[in-house]
Amino acid sequence: MDLSFFTRSDDVAGELVPTALACSSWSDNHLHGVAVAGALARSAGSALTDLGRDDLSPTRMSVDLFRPAAMQPCALEVDVVREGPRICLIDVTLMQAGERVARAAFLFLKPSTTAPGVVWSPPASARATPPPLDVAPVSDEPRVPFVHSEAGWSQNFSEHQNASHKESWNSAVPIVGGEPLTPFQAVAATADAASLVTNWGSGGVEHINTDITLAIARLPLGLEIGLSAIDRVEADGIAVGTAAVFDRTGTLGTVVTTSLANARRTVDLGRTNYDDDGTRRDAKPGE
Image (cartoon, rainbow, N blue to C red):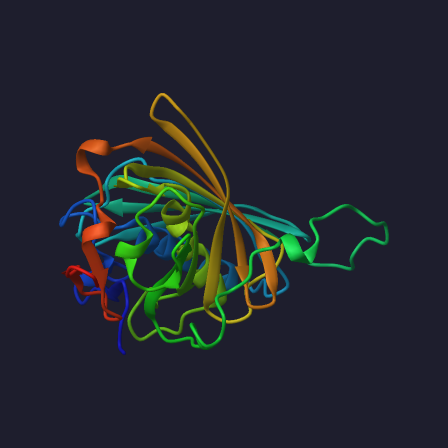
């Protein structure tokens, strides 16, 4: 399938034009956070390549979603804040019609040898694992995410509109048409989907992300990314959700999202199902 969130503009060099796949469930005129985070990460990765720093690995991404991004052309402005022997910090701002819509700070570090001391970490048995291969065979092709709740693993969203613990297994979508998707872009874009495992409850998704902070110790192997809710705290309409990020070989790190209650415009996933090309359709009774 030839799917992507953006295409290159034919009119303005460097601008990205959203496709229908980038449209948010909150509004037909808004981009979803997965597309926004992916576009920001693509620009940061390109800037690092332009610096010739193939010795550095992405370690942290902090995204602020402070204005609704419209289904309009996007310009990305890049600022290399600091480049050193073992570190590089890059800021990226997403602009629309001359206004700042979102921004992200990226941290890249130089890998080295593991320290010899022994430090506590959770046992492997406590870590999240992907769905069984007979449910979700290995694939780098975009497809509807698999979700796990008390209903088990499935791609039927209507089965998971409940208050139980949630996990998801995602095959990332290319950011820009005609460009290969990198593992960095895949994990950065998927980070926004942590809202589906931390904010999706019996009433649907009733909180909208205001920021995303992804921290990883290594890149994923491949383009399949898992998310598993670790914690959630809410007070006075402000929620903080934490999820583990993992691939088929183990845990990569964590993603933390902060969000605001948006119950008047709830995303009711119990009434919606999706096709692999991103088409939304009403869930039929019993589907």
